[in-house]
Image (cartoon, rainbow, N blue to C red):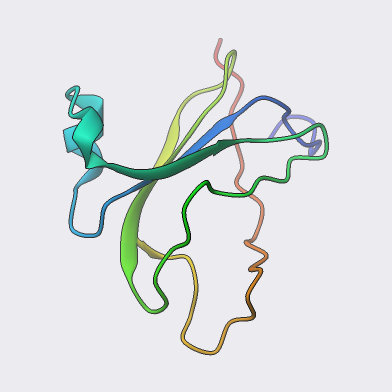
Length: 95
């Protein structure tokens, strides 16, 4: 949020449908559906496909930034192309 620039090396974690973010934060590794690490340009590709019109808990974790999370995020609408472009996630520098 401070620079508007991409963050390389951030983890993007999609939880299994119905799994709340709190499950992952409380150590439930089995709640993870798929994850990826962002490249230098901030892009990523999850290791597993996501179902269309299905809500996932999502976390973005990056060293030096506050974690970002969202419950019930639909990552791919029913009419979305095979490769989906998500809007940027703003990460706040941890101070």
